[in-house]
Image (cartoon, rainbow, N blue to C red; front, side, top):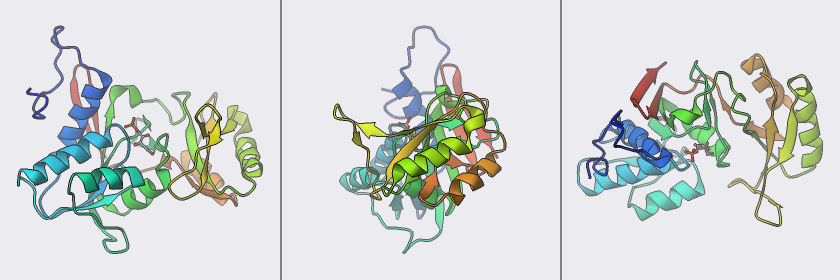
Length: 252
Ligand code: 5RP
């Protein structure tokens, strides 16, 4: 019950077994403590951010928060926030966002991120690069020594036109890091996953570090056919990590 109220910190007590989803929720509830009435809020996407959006909706309903404007980072979050009665807008009307709360797929020691395994990297990057504070919420499984180091995908959003050509160029760009580029698909029929913006995602897998991240970022963005990539460099101002032994708050 305490955790449902968002009050429980992870405990080292062996009698408390926290699931990964519990940890996500604990990080999310902690991040919502940064929210103040009157704020324009970037609403993240994914299974961790979902808890933060739910909590914001709950606090609004209880009258503990007032005059919030939410800027969703995906169609899915838009639907969730609408169902919770959170007033919504967009970057055209609110080009400055006070605070964004979102999950991440990887966090390196310098608080650089990989995002977009949920497929919403483009809108997330647009909203989160417009915010004064960007609070990232993760469970400890997301911490890596270097980006790409989890062995999981680094997503790149590409236009559908000749995506194989773009994927081949991406793979070649990082051939020294053992890069393999794969089109993201879903379902048994392996249909291409289409983003909220009508694009495809090419997932990059590496077997070693890609070196200087800014150089890598610039090289990816220079390829015609690339819309955006999932490296969020120097954007997070705070990362809240929930682990079995408690919460850690890392500030830039
Ligand atoms: C979606 C994202 C998510 O924030 C990221 O994939 C983390 O998701 P989850 O909280 O479900 O682990 O970037 O595009």
